[in-house]
Amino acid sequence: MTRSALALAAALVLSLGCDDETPSMMEDAGPPPPIDAGFDAAPSPEVCHGDAVGTPPVIPDPGPATPPPTLDCGTPEIVEGTSLWRWPYLESATQTTVRVAWTTRNTGGRGVVRFAADPAGPWTEVEAATELFESTRTAQGEDYVAYDATLSGLTPGSAYCYEIVEDGEVLARNLRFETAWLGTDRPVRMLVIGDSGSGSDDQLAVRDAFMEGEYDLFLHMGDMAYGSGRYDELESNFFDVYQVLMREVPIFPTIGNHEYVTNVGQPYRDVYHLLENAWREADRELYYSFDYGNIHFTCLDSNEATLIPIYLDTNGRMTDDMFDWMVDDITSSDADWKIVFMHHPFYSSSERGIRTNNIARFRSLLEQAGVDLILVGHDHHYERTNPLVDGCNALEPRGVTEIIAGGSGASIRTIDDPNQWFSARVFNADYSYLRLEVHGCRLRGQALDTSNEVVDDFELNGCDP
Image (cartoon, rainbow, N blue to C red; front, side, top):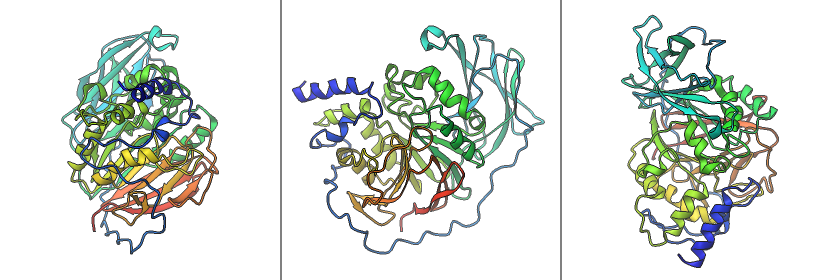
């Protein structure tokens, strides 16, 4: 290993324990090496910062919207006095499957999920896998048992009632979930937040505000468990806070730098059961992809633990790393919309500024692969960029919009310059969340504060002209 490679590796080890205030070494990593994913690195984003030239394309009318399925499962009930600890939460929803997970306090009985397309039945029963988490492993003061059940053979775009049972005792009943679907008729409604896991009153205020809406999926941009991504922090600052939402809306998270601090992200990987479609077995659940409606989502790991080995591979010897996988994943999809979400931004008006080297090495590949929208967190404010490509303002659909949704609970960042050339809207006067709705070629987005006042309202075009 060369001296520079050793220095980078040493910095990686140190970076895993760094606080959010510490600048990333990836911002000053020197000139970019060759990229090993089949695309060329972009030029340095120092030119053409003026307004995009031309007329933006007209977004086609998506037509009438098909409403979500109606199914009344009764009043949701978490039964008191049982062994249930972490409420049931939905994960990895696809067109035909969904995973249901929960925990109980060291009882370890036979756990099952019962579900039906009608509250009158017939009911199907699926036994859950179990894993004991001893307090010596989690440092939570008591042992608990984690349950995970995959429900399969489901109908796309349909609603189901479900309940969870242990040894014949009902722990939760009258719950409801929906499966994913393909196509353009039905809008996809998304809740997007990041950097929420402070356990503060501000986090709860954001939660209370967004619970007034209705969503099909919940995207979290990482840093859901300050300060170290420990088991107890995930419990108190994430699951306890969002348990009512996640019993009916599936969670699709990405790993933040704070989740990496404890045992290189092991608690994060233990509490989630994410889609395992990355090529490398060791990387599965750190990045993955899925489809909803006419959207292809690609979740990436933007932390240094994943990026540095890719950047060190200057000769492109590895052909199965995350960059290789993501380019293949994105370009293989024929979905109208290609949305990438991860933790770290490329462009920001906060004191962290523009991550020039990551733009050249990383974002350039996303642009060339045909991504429409990049969702991120890490910087604790809301910001939407202009459509950008090759470091220039560009018209849609060629330009790629990036949105920071990091103002959902952690202390809000200072904005150095609210009038940056790349920024369409920046907001840090209050905490906030983002809701998106995709219908056909049209994406409607709104950022809202804790009073549910709209602080940004926009539309994007996801289809080729």
